[in-house]
Image (cartoon, rainbow, N blue to C red; front, side):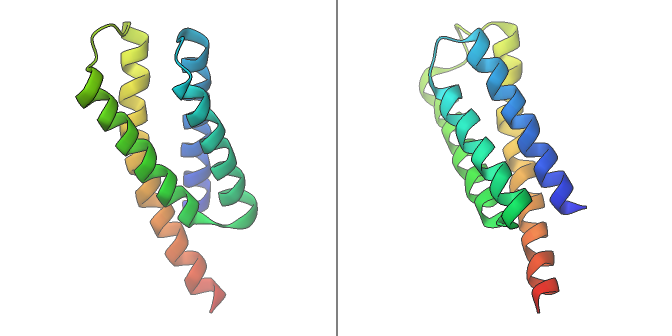
Length: 109
């Protein structure tokens, strides 16, 4: 169950960052799209949930830094929604990746 949740969250982040690439002129969402895509592969095919934890912390940190340094002015409403989703989903990714990692370790014993 946790593995599917991690993968679903990662797919949502890939879709969100894809949408952001389309509507924005900034290249940061291309990096997010690429990273979350690679981490989705690692979690689904390799059961490497630590990658999900790391990506969650990095993604959350980057978006918190963006809000602190640049604010949300200049963003259209749709972009604000994408930014908020990029703040919430990494928190869920960290939580469920940690749970999936613990379950995978328990099953490996």
